[in-house]
Image (cartoon, rainbow, N blue to C red):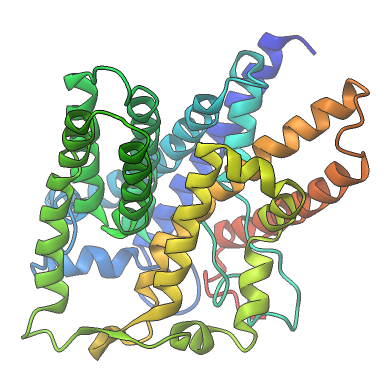
Length: 389
Protein backbone atom coordinates (compact mmCIF):
# COMPACT_ATOMS: atom_id res chain seq x y z
CA UNK A 1 0.00 0.00 0.00
CA UNK A 2 1.42 3.40 -1.00
CA UNK A 3 2.33 5.94 1.66
CA UNK A 4 -0.29 8.45 0.51
CA UNK A 5 -3.05 5.83 0.67
CA UNK A 6 -1.98 4.73 4.14
CA UNK A 7 -1.95 8.32 5.34
CA UNK A 8 -5.44 8.92 3.92
CA UNK A 9 -6.77 5.82 5.68
CA UNK A 10 -5.14 6.93 8.93
CA UNK A 11 -6.82 10.35 8.77
CA UNK A 12 -10.18 8.77 7.89
CA UNK A 13 -9.94 6.60 11.01
CA UNK A 14 -9.20 9.67 13.13
CA UNK A 15 -12.17 11.51 11.61
CA UNK A 16 -14.44 8.53 12.31
CA UNK A 17 -13.18 8.45 15.89
CA UNK A 18 -13.88 12.18 16.24
CA UNK A 19 -17.40 11.79 14.81
CA UNK A 20 -18.20 8.95 17.21
CA UNK A 21 -16.86 10.98 20.14
CA UNK A 22 -19.00 13.97 19.11
CA UNK A 23 -22.10 11.75 18.88
CA UNK A 24 -21.32 10.28 22.30
CA UNK A 25 -20.87 13.69 23.92
CA UNK A 26 -24.08 14.98 22.39
CA UNK A 27 -26.00 12.04 23.83
CA UNK A 28 -24.33 12.71 27.18
CA UNK A 29 -25.60 16.30 27.19
CA UNK A 30 -29.13 14.87 26.96
CA UNK A 31 -28.70 12.64 30.01
CA UNK A 32 -31.33 13.18 32.71
CA UNK A 33 -30.90 10.02 34.76
CA UNK A 34 -30.50 6.28 34.45
CA UNK A 35 -27.59 4.26 33.11
CA UNK A 36 -27.84 5.25 29.42
CA UNK A 37 -25.14 7.72 28.22
CA UNK A 38 -24.39 8.57 31.84
CA UNK A 39 -21.47 10.97 32.37
CA UNK A 40 -20.21 13.90 34.44
CA UNK A 41 -20.95 16.36 31.62
CA UNK A 42 -24.52 17.37 32.65
CA UNK A 43 -23.30 17.96 36.20
CA UNK A 44 -20.41 20.11 34.95
CA UNK A 45 -22.81 22.18 32.85
CA UNK A 46 -25.27 22.50 35.73
CA UNK A 47 -22.55 23.72 38.10
CA UNK A 48 -22.06 26.86 36.05
CA UNK A 49 -25.54 27.36 34.57
CA UNK A 50 -27.58 26.65 37.70
CA UNK A 51 -25.12 27.21 40.56
CA UNK A 52 -22.78 29.80 39.07
CA UNK A 53 -19.83 27.70 40.23
CA UNK A 54 -16.69 28.55 38.23
CA UNK A 55 -14.85 25.35 39.06
CA UNK A 56 -12.93 25.21 35.73
CA UNK A 57 -12.17 27.34 32.70
CA UNK A 58 -14.44 25.03 30.70
CA UNK A 59 -17.35 26.45 32.71
CA UNK A 60 -17.07 29.68 30.72
CA UNK A 61 -17.33 27.71 27.47
CA UNK A 62 -20.42 25.82 28.64
CA UNK A 63 -22.05 29.03 29.84
CA UNK A 64 -21.46 30.70 26.48
CA UNK A 65 -22.91 27.72 24.62
CA UNK A 66 -25.91 27.56 26.98
CA UNK A 67 -26.80 31.15 26.16
CA UNK A 68 -27.07 30.20 22.47
CA UNK A 69 -30.17 28.15 23.18
CA UNK A 70 -30.90 24.90 21.36
CA UNK A 71 -27.55 24.96 19.60
CA UNK A 72 -25.73 24.81 22.93
CA UNK A 73 -25.71 21.02 23.26
CA UNK A 74 -24.49 20.56 19.69
CA UNK A 75 -21.69 23.09 20.17
CA UNK A 76 -20.70 21.49 23.49
CA UNK A 77 -20.49 18.09 21.82
CA UNK A 78 -18.49 19.52 18.90
CA UNK A 79 -16.11 21.28 21.31
CA UNK A 80 -15.42 18.06 23.22
CA UNK A 81 -15.24 16.02 20.01
CA UNK A 82 -12.63 18.43 18.65
CA UNK A 83 -10.74 18.09 21.96
CA UNK A 84 -10.64 14.31 21.55
CA UNK A 85 -9.29 14.63 18.00
CA UNK A 86 -6.70 17.19 19.12
CA UNK A 87 -5.53 14.72 21.76
CA UNK A 88 -4.83 12.19 18.98
CA UNK A 89 -3.10 14.72 16.71
CA UNK A 90 -0.90 16.10 19.48
CA UNK A 91 -0.09 12.60 20.73
CA UNK A 92 1.28 11.80 17.26
CA UNK A 93 3.48 14.92 17.48
CA UNK A 94 4.60 13.91 20.98
CA UNK A 95 5.65 10.49 19.65
CA UNK A 96 7.65 12.18 16.88
CA UNK A 97 9.38 14.47 19.38
CA UNK A 98 11.30 11.58 20.93
CA UNK A 99 13.81 10.64 18.23
CA UNK A 100 12.00 10.57 14.88
CA UNK A 101 12.14 6.79 14.46
CA UNK A 102 9.36 4.99 12.57
CA UNK A 103 8.02 8.26 11.18
CA UNK A 104 6.89 6.90 7.79
CA UNK A 105 5.51 10.29 6.70
CA UNK A 106 3.46 10.53 9.88
CA UNK A 107 1.35 7.40 9.33
CA UNK A 108 2.80 5.27 12.12
CA UNK A 109 2.83 8.08 14.73
CA UNK A 110 -0.77 8.94 13.85
CA UNK A 111 -2.00 5.34 14.12
CA UNK A 112 0.02 4.86 17.29
CA UNK A 113 -1.58 8.02 18.71
CA UNK A 114 -5.06 6.70 17.93
CA UNK A 115 -4.19 3.45 19.70
CA UNK A 116 -2.82 5.33 22.73
CA UNK A 117 -6.04 7.32 23.00
CA UNK A 118 -8.32 4.28 22.94
CA UNK A 119 -6.48 1.63 24.99
CA UNK A 120 -8.20 0.61 28.21
CA UNK A 121 -7.16 -1.59 31.16
CA UNK A 122 -6.95 -5.32 30.54
CA UNK A 123 -10.25 -6.58 31.90
CA UNK A 124 -10.46 -9.95 33.64
CA UNK A 125 -13.84 -10.85 35.05
CA UNK A 126 -13.56 -11.41 38.76
CA UNK A 127 -10.31 -9.46 39.06
CA UNK A 128 -12.07 -6.11 38.74
CA UNK A 129 -15.57 -4.91 39.51
CA UNK A 130 -15.98 -3.59 35.98
CA UNK A 131 -14.21 -2.37 32.86
CA UNK A 132 -13.56 1.08 34.32
CA UNK A 133 -14.39 1.60 38.01
CA UNK A 134 -11.42 0.52 40.13
CA UNK A 135 -9.13 0.54 37.08
CA UNK A 136 -6.95 3.41 35.86
CA UNK A 137 -6.79 4.66 32.27
CA UNK A 138 -5.73 7.66 30.19
CA UNK A 139 -8.69 6.97 27.85
CA UNK A 140 -11.63 8.74 29.45
CA UNK A 141 -14.79 9.87 27.67
CA UNK A 142 -17.14 10.74 30.53
CA UNK A 143 -15.34 13.63 32.25
CA UNK A 144 -15.39 16.86 30.26
CA UNK A 145 -12.66 18.68 32.20
CA UNK A 146 -10.26 15.76 31.69
CA UNK A 147 -11.09 15.57 27.97
CA UNK A 148 -10.08 19.22 27.49
CA UNK A 149 -7.11 19.03 29.87
CA UNK A 150 -5.72 16.03 28.01
CA UNK A 151 -4.78 17.74 24.74
CA UNK A 152 -3.52 20.82 26.57
CA UNK A 153 -1.33 18.62 28.78
CA UNK A 154 0.09 16.83 25.73
CA UNK A 155 0.96 20.22 24.21
CA UNK A 156 2.66 21.18 27.48
CA UNK A 157 4.80 18.04 27.23
CA UNK A 158 5.71 18.79 23.61
CA UNK A 159 6.94 22.28 24.48
CA UNK A 160 8.68 21.01 27.59
CA UNK A 161 10.67 18.52 25.51
CA UNK A 162 11.58 21.17 22.96
CA UNK A 163 12.82 23.61 25.62
CA UNK A 164 14.51 21.03 27.83
CA UNK A 165 16.59 19.74 24.93
CA UNK A 166 18.13 23.20 24.56
CA UNK A 167 18.51 23.95 28.26
CA UNK A 168 22.32 24.09 27.83
CA UNK A 169 21.95 26.82 25.21
CA UNK A 170 20.14 30.13 25.03
CA UNK A 171 16.42 29.72 25.65
CA UNK A 172 13.92 31.24 23.24
CA UNK A 173 11.57 33.71 24.91
CA UNK A 174 8.78 32.78 22.50
CA UNK A 175 8.88 29.09 23.49
CA UNK A 176 9.01 29.94 27.20
CA UNK A 177 5.97 32.20 26.86
CA UNK A 178 4.00 29.56 24.93
CA UNK A 179 4.98 26.92 27.49
CA UNK A 180 3.90 29.17 30.36
CA UNK A 181 0.57 30.10 28.74
CA UNK A 182 -0.20 26.45 27.97
CA UNK A 183 0.55 25.45 31.55
CA UNK A 184 -1.71 28.22 32.84
CA UNK A 185 -4.68 27.24 30.69
CA UNK A 186 -4.14 23.52 31.33
CA UNK A 187 -4.25 24.09 35.10
CA UNK A 188 -7.23 26.43 34.75
CA UNK A 189 -9.14 23.59 33.07
CA UNK A 190 -7.99 20.91 35.53
CA UNK A 191 -4.94 21.12 37.84
CA UNK A 192 -4.28 17.36 37.79
CA UNK A 193 -1.56 17.48 35.11
CA UNK A 194 0.51 20.02 37.01
CA UNK A 195 0.48 17.76 40.08
CA UNK A 196 2.37 15.03 38.21
CA UNK A 197 4.37 17.20 35.83
CA UNK A 198 5.86 19.72 38.28
CA UNK A 199 7.67 17.08 40.42
CA UNK A 200 9.22 15.52 37.32
CA UNK A 201 10.33 18.90 36.01
CA UNK A 202 11.83 19.82 39.40
CA UNK A 203 13.82 16.56 39.59
CA UNK A 204 15.29 17.09 36.13
CA UNK A 205 16.07 20.74 36.88
CA UNK A 206 18.02 19.68 39.98
CA UNK A 207 19.91 17.13 37.88
CA UNK A 208 20.64 19.81 35.27
CA UNK A 209 21.91 22.15 37.99
CA UNK A 210 24.26 19.45 39.29
CA UNK A 211 25.68 18.80 35.83
CA UNK A 212 26.43 22.50 35.36
CA UNK A 213 23.56 23.98 33.35
CA UNK A 214 23.39 27.77 33.66
CA UNK A 215 21.39 28.85 36.70
CA UNK A 216 19.88 31.66 34.60
CA UNK A 217 18.39 29.16 32.15
CA UNK A 218 16.97 26.99 34.92
CA UNK A 219 15.57 30.03 36.73
CA UNK A 220 13.60 31.29 33.73
CA UNK A 221 12.49 27.78 32.82
CA UNK A 222 11.19 27.23 36.35
CA UNK A 223 9.50 30.65 36.46
CA UNK A 224 7.54 29.73 33.33
CA UNK A 225 5.61 27.28 35.49
CA UNK A 226 4.60 29.82 38.15
CA UNK A 227 1.49 31.22 36.37
CA UNK A 228 0.01 27.70 36.41
CA UNK A 229 -0.07 27.85 40.22
CA UNK A 230 -2.59 30.72 40.16
CA UNK A 231 -5.62 28.70 38.94
CA UNK A 232 -4.58 25.84 41.24
CA UNK A 233 -4.81 28.11 44.28
CA UNK A 234 -8.12 29.57 43.08
CA UNK A 235 -9.60 26.14 42.48
CA UNK A 236 -8.43 25.01 45.91
CA UNK A 237 -10.40 27.87 47.48
CA UNK A 238 -13.49 27.02 45.44
CA UNK A 239 -13.40 23.26 46.02
CA UNK A 240 -11.94 23.11 49.52
CA UNK A 241 -12.86 26.46 51.08
CA UNK A 242 -14.00 26.55 54.70
CA UNK A 243 -17.65 26.91 53.69
CA UNK A 244 -17.61 23.86 51.39
CA UNK A 245 -17.12 21.21 54.05
CA UNK A 246 -14.60 19.52 51.77
CA UNK A 247 -11.00 18.76 52.66
CA UNK A 248 -7.91 16.81 51.67
CA UNK A 249 -6.80 13.96 53.93
CA UNK A 250 -3.99 11.42 54.03
CA UNK A 251 -5.63 7.99 53.81
CA UNK A 252 -3.39 5.45 52.03
CA UNK A 253 -5.26 3.07 49.73
CA UNK A 254 -8.74 4.17 50.82
CA UNK A 255 -9.95 5.28 47.39
CA UNK A 256 -8.50 2.21 45.67
CA UNK A 257 -10.14 -0.16 48.16
CA UNK A 258 -13.44 1.68 47.86
CA UNK A 259 -13.51 1.27 44.08
CA UNK A 260 -12.29 -2.30 43.72
CA UNK A 261 -12.33 -5.58 45.59
CA UNK A 262 -8.93 -6.34 44.03
CA UNK A 263 -7.31 -2.87 43.86
CA UNK A 264 -3.70 -3.90 43.29
CA UNK A 265 -4.49 -6.57 40.71
CA UNK A 266 -6.68 -4.02 38.91
CA UNK A 267 -3.85 -1.47 39.08
CA UNK A 268 -1.48 -3.97 37.47
CA UNK A 269 -3.94 -4.91 34.74
CA UNK A 270 -4.45 -1.22 33.99
CA UNK A 271 -0.82 -0.83 32.85
CA UNK A 272 0.02 -4.43 31.94
CA UNK A 273 1.65 -3.51 28.61
CA UNK A 274 4.09 -0.87 29.90
CA UNK A 275 4.86 -3.08 32.92
CA UNK A 276 5.93 -5.92 30.63
CA UNK A 277 7.97 -3.57 28.44
CA UNK A 278 9.66 -2.09 31.49
CA UNK A 279 10.63 -5.53 32.80
CA UNK A 280 12.45 -6.31 29.55
CA UNK A 281 13.92 -2.83 29.00
CA UNK A 282 14.47 -1.29 32.43
CA UNK A 283 18.11 -0.31 31.68
CA UNK A 284 17.10 1.47 28.47
CA UNK A 285 14.28 3.32 30.22
CA UNK A 286 16.49 4.49 33.07
CA UNK A 287 19.15 5.68 30.62
CA UNK A 288 16.86 7.83 28.43
CA UNK A 289 15.62 11.07 29.92
CA UNK A 290 12.26 11.15 28.11
CA UNK A 291 11.50 7.56 29.05
CA UNK A 292 12.54 8.15 32.65
CA UNK A 293 10.35 11.27 32.73
CA UNK A 294 7.27 9.24 31.87
CA UNK A 295 8.11 6.80 34.66
CA UNK A 296 8.61 9.62 37.20
CA UNK A 297 5.28 11.25 36.30
CA UNK A 298 3.43 7.95 36.61
CA UNK A 299 5.13 7.21 39.93
CA UNK A 300 4.14 10.56 41.43
CA UNK A 301 0.64 10.21 39.98
CA UNK A 302 0.12 6.78 41.50
CA UNK A 303 1.53 7.96 44.84
CA UNK A 304 -0.96 10.87 44.92
CA UNK A 305 -3.82 8.55 43.98
CA UNK A 306 -2.79 6.01 46.62
CA UNK A 307 -2.06 8.39 49.48
CA UNK A 308 -4.65 11.15 49.29
CA UNK A 309 -8.41 11.26 49.61
CA UNK A 310 -11.05 13.90 50.18
CA UNK A 311 -13.51 14.53 52.96
CA UNK A 312 -16.99 16.02 52.78
CA UNK A 313 -19.23 15.63 49.74
CA UNK A 314 -16.25 14.63 47.60
CA UNK A 315 -15.16 11.83 49.92
CA UNK A 316 -13.74 8.80 48.08
CA UNK A 317 -14.59 10.28 44.65
CA UNK A 318 -11.06 9.55 43.53
CA UNK A 319 -10.32 13.02 42.19
CA UNK A 320 -6.62 12.55 42.94
CA UNK A 321 -6.58 9.83 40.29
CA UNK A 322 -6.83 12.22 37.32
CA UNK A 323 -3.13 13.10 37.31
CA UNK A 324 -2.17 9.44 37.31
CA UNK A 325 -4.76 8.77 34.60
CA UNK A 326 -3.03 11.22 32.28
CA UNK A 327 0.46 9.99 33.24
CA UNK A 328 -0.52 6.57 31.90
CA UNK A 329 -0.56 8.06 28.37
CA UNK A 330 3.19 8.86 28.19
CA UNK A 331 3.82 5.56 29.99
CA UNK A 332 2.07 3.69 27.15
CA UNK A 333 3.79 5.94 24.59
CA UNK A 334 7.20 4.90 25.90
CA UNK A 335 6.15 1.25 25.84
CA UNK A 336 4.86 1.53 22.27
CA UNK A 337 8.01 3.32 21.12
CA UNK A 338 10.16 0.52 22.54
CA UNK A 339 7.89 -2.17 21.05
CA UNK A 340 8.21 -0.63 17.58
CA UNK A 341 11.99 -0.64 17.97
CA UNK A 342 11.92 -4.30 19.06
CA UNK A 343 9.84 -5.23 16.02
CA UNK A 344 12.10 -3.24 13.68
CA UNK A 345 15.21 -4.99 15.01
CA UNK A 346 13.67 -8.41 14.45
CA UNK A 347 12.52 -7.49 10.94
CA UNK A 348 16.12 -6.56 10.18
CA UNK A 349 17.05 -10.02 11.52
CA UNK A 350 19.20 -8.60 14.28
CA UNK A 351 17.28 -10.78 16.73
CA UNK A 352 18.04 -8.37 19.53
CA UNK A 353 15.85 -8.67 21.50
CA UNK A 354 14.67 -12.22 20.96
CA UNK A 355 11.46 -12.55 18.92
CA UNK A 356 9.59 -13.84 21.97
CA UNK A 357 9.88 -10.46 23.72
CA UNK A 358 8.03 -8.31 21.12
CA UNK A 359 5.45 -11.12 20.77
CA UNK A 360 4.65 -10.97 24.49
CA UNK A 361 4.65 -7.15 24.42
CA UNK A 362 2.37 -7.09 21.36
CA UNK A 363 -0.06 -9.57 22.93
CA UNK A 364 -0.41 -7.36 26.00
CA UNK A 365 -0.93 -4.24 23.88
CA UNK A 366 -3.54 -5.96 21.71
CA UNK A 367 -5.42 -6.95 24.86
CA UNK A 368 -5.49 -3.30 25.94
CA UNK A 369 -6.65 -2.26 22.46
CA UNK A 370 -9.39 -4.89 22.38
CA UNK A 371 -10.67 -3.80 25.80
CA UNK A 372 -10.57 -0.18 24.64
CA UNK A 373 -12.58 -0.87 21.50
CA UNK A 374 -15.16 -2.88 23.48
CA UNK A 375 -15.44 -0.17 26.12
CA UNK A 376 -15.73 2.68 23.62
CA UNK A 377 -18.26 0.78 21.50
CA UNK A 378 -20.41 0.14 24.56
CA UNK A 379 -20.27 3.83 25.48
CA UNK A 380 -21.34 4.89 21.97
CA UNK A 381 -24.22 2.41 22.18
CA UNK A 382 -25.40 3.98 25.43
CA UNK A 383 -23.91 1.87 28.22
CA UNK A 384 -22.96 3.80 31.37
CA UNK A 385 -19.25 4.41 31.85
CA UNK A 386 -19.54 2.58 35.19
CA UNK A 387 -19.87 -0.63 33.16
CA UNK A 388 -20.16 -2.98 36.13
CA UNK A 389 -19.48 -6.66 35.47
